[in-house]
Length: 212
Image (tube, rainbow, N blue to C red; front, side, top):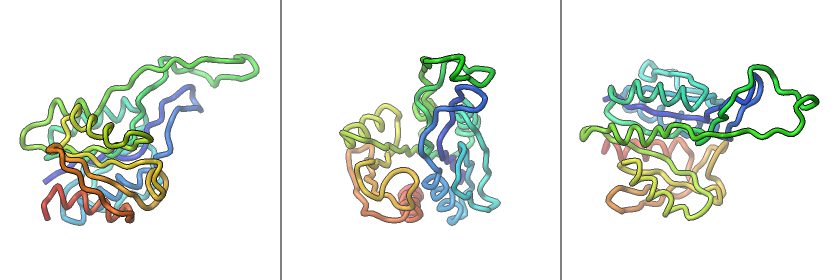
C-alpha cells in the first residue's frame, strides 16, 4: 500500500521577500505520515514550508514545495500511483496575479493594491481523477457553520470522509499539539472525537482507512 499525504501551508509570493501565507505548521500532516509509516505503509509526503519534524523513515518519501502551484503539480504527479490520499495541507485559495521582481519599497510605492486570483483546487482535481479502488480524505478547518461547510466540501470534492475542526474550539487548529475533530462520512454519518494529541488523531484516521 502507498498513500499520498500533504501537509503544511503554501507561501504565495508578492515579491522576493514577502508572501501571503497562513499559520499551518504541518503538525497534523506529519503525524498522519508517521501513523502510516508505523503500520509499514509507504508514504509520498508532499509538504509546504513546515516547522514540524518529518519522520525519519525509509517509508516516508518527502517532497518540499512552496507555492500552491508547486503543490498542485507534485500531487498530480503522484496521486495516480497511490492507493489513496490524505489531503491535510492548508493550501492557499488565492495567489497574487503579479509577482514583483524586486522588493517593493514603501517609500516609493506608497499605498498599493494586490490583485489575487484563485489557485487550482487540488482536492477537487484529485476527486475528479479518483478511481474506484482509491480513497480520499480531506480536512476542513472552519470558523462558522462548520458541519454544513464540511459536508458540502466532502460532496464537491468526492471525498470518502472529511476531518472537520473549528477555530472556535480550544485546543484545535494551527500550531498546537492537540486537536478536536469530527469525521463526516460520505454516507452521512458523523463521528466526534474528544480532545486528543494530534498523534492520536492521526492514528484514528489511519485506523479508519486501513480498518486495523
